[in-house]
Image (cartoon, rainbow, N blue to C red):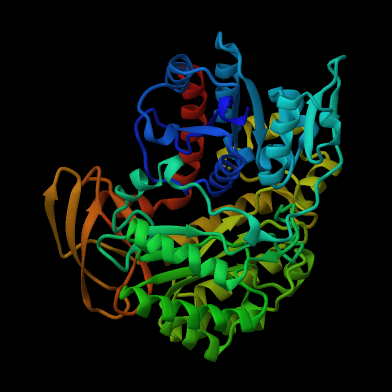
Length: 539
């Protein structure tokens, strides 16, 4: 019976455009869902809207008219509310009337609000691999879906019902590898350029493979939302997937997406040894990046990681103020941040990190403390931004309690995707907060190393070869296969292949724009909101 059931998974658009756009983070969650359904014997097709040109409604109607589907599934986070809404409304209005299943953080973080607003037929709450299979099997067999943990649906009276939450999947090795092929991974892979993302700069022809080596996080930072506890895959399972990635896709860069790559040093050492053996086995050069906590690294580990091909590490610095770090429930110290930052650079590994301002405990004093450290020590290698109250996070709940967010749905639907910031602190006036925003963005604009190429040569339509002098090591580096849509206004983050410091390659016009960064940023937020409203009407 399963083979007669047709399921369409729709990947939302991640960019505000009706053009094909391959520059997006590959949807690992839906890739795992597709793999689980196929393993269970269901027939699954995928419609990746990022790979399609035209209006969302036209594309989906075309797919639903070509083939009869029993179920349509989609999902993402709250930032894509408008796109998810368009998808669900289009599917709901199609004459074939397939049942709609919605999953992902957008529904998991605010089940009742989102379920009642978007009104899917079924919701999958939390990890979905086991849940979606059990739900569809129950529906097709006419069983009582009340027994399926981790779902939402409506009873005969129309009342929203949510079953007991499902426990996190403990044995991640039991899950099939993500269904990248079905979701169009190779198509995206063929359109990755040297400057698509700063972690891709090491090769002129990057073949980036996204890897999830663990799930969840053991920490409870107030600005973050995650549903599951921390669990790790076995090293054998991880290496088997990477071996397949190199053989199937010619992967040469591994982007490890874990919220926390490892909380145990022994696991880091093991991964380094295993990936070196894999490179020798396959006669390939593999570079990789990961996310770490500053209290889990030291000089020896960094040296081992560098030797094993680690080219970039992402850290969650968040603040240099001990007061704010405690308020955020960050289990790190300012001293550990400073030590990890400089030892990583000394090891020849690029750093990706952020300081985010606006925590509940933020004051002019704490913000100045962090900003001064950034100006004196960070060499333009750490981004500056402001906290966003993502649904489900403790800061989001604080904003609800204080009345800073008066309407959950209005905030998720109309404000969260804009990137606009507001004063969530308990120790700053609105005027002080506005000044802090200006100070932060002005500091970042002045602290960015912005370099114009020594030479720029057009190879084909939008592909260029650049010679660039690194502002740090002063070496001239060539970057081939760079995508530049407009030679007048280009600007992108790059890593020096010699010293591994980050800087920006910019046109004359873009360099001028960066000198007025705070004003330009405000204008872009306004423009983004306007474009979003227009696109929503047109799609």
